[in-house]
Image (cartoon, rainbow over all chains, first blue to last red; front, side):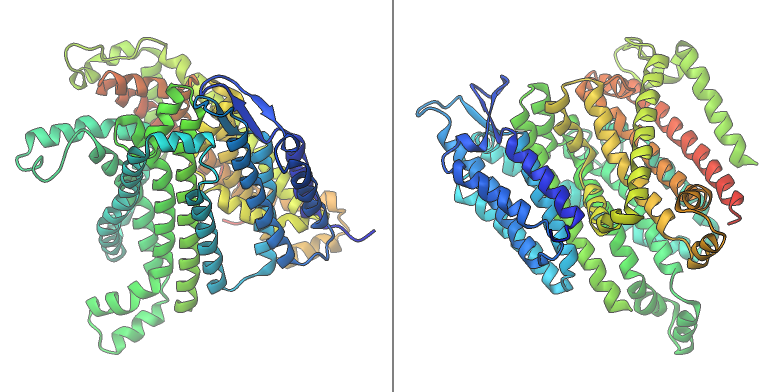
Length: 379
Length: 244
């Protein structure tokens, strides 16, 4: 008996449980509860099921190479997704446009098992930074390819998408505008503020304290408070309304996200600047650099990795928090999440939640790679 | 001195507000329009606050126990093989938006407190696990050697050396989890959990800023107080192991 890799055994157990449970749910319409359909009852199921089982079991021995596991994990993910599409195009009787096929526990467990296997394999391969970028791009391209190819068009989430394609694109743009717009504003205001409190030591306590308290206000309340506050500003201060200030729509959400983003940006700017060794600064002054030159040519470049780490925190956090904008009419993918919760239409919730999760994941991984890149450059 | 007085004053004000919210009506009146009520009265604010705190406490306790046990498992014996994977999963898990987790838990658990508890538990697991892991694996080599030289069994070493040394970092993880959970629990009201989010959402639906302010301020003050309490506990734990 060969030595087994404990993580691989765990993935195999999760995956085999997923194979035993129903892969999809077949529902008469989008709201009623459905019945589960297993992988074995689908076309091609009788051979895909043992094949997936074999992939899971074969990865268990400790000496199975990481590259082979990576390939198996990708194959498993693609196979599970294709079977989901097959189920969606075969189960509903022809001509029935009300019936829905949604992914069920079996599909999610398979996705979890192969996703974990993928993460484990990537860890073991220790790919170079360049290769990690290629892998990320490959994963994004593969997902986009599957979505565009139309094999999943029958799945309930994609049906929800098909009926509101224009709205989805608009809300997607609004979501990105909220997340990136608030990040941009936070960088514009936060970096100078961080530089100011780096030089004026006695302002550090009050500024960071105020930003900390801002952070404790629950997001739901901050979004809500912004509506009347900005409405008042737009109505009373001349020129504010012309400048785009408004108490309704996207603007309150943008300001709320901006306020949440300030603390990470300001505190990381400060700690990045404080982390530059004193001899480095003295050497720069000794070279005859002015204060502004020291800041622009020495301090800021050396503080860049810490600053980028703040960008990562803020971007991932704002992509998630922007969902709440959907509750106050600020747009974004949250619109679908809360609409779906109100109508107990889970397919609609998924239509909002899945792209949000995907965006946050890609942004998180890409910025991690960027941070690693600049660390290497600065070191 | 002000570091102690300010939280105490905030706590007293909060208590007074929760026991007799009606007497604070003049303060909130300016934020209402068209003679709308200034104080939320559909449900008692005190009972909502207690229910909110109970949900957060259960979730934080559960994620602390689970996170600590997982961190202990992956730092010794056969569990070590899971360590790199556990780190990756933690990093990836933290990018999942809490609102999305909450919404996705609804089909499995139905509406009510259940999905909120699960979302808070899962989301809280990560900071606790990460910090417990750092605390358990970041000890200087001489400490481990001294423990071995004293003849401590692995179990004695865990209880007498590793866990006390990891306590300050664990408390920091619990603090993060508790403060995040307090805010996130308000969103639980969108799936019918009994939390202070109910007051905020009632304010949003009826455009009554007074309600939004009330709900937000109670949660904010609770968060500041809990933050302070954990910080005090962290300082004591650090003193006990001789760090400060």
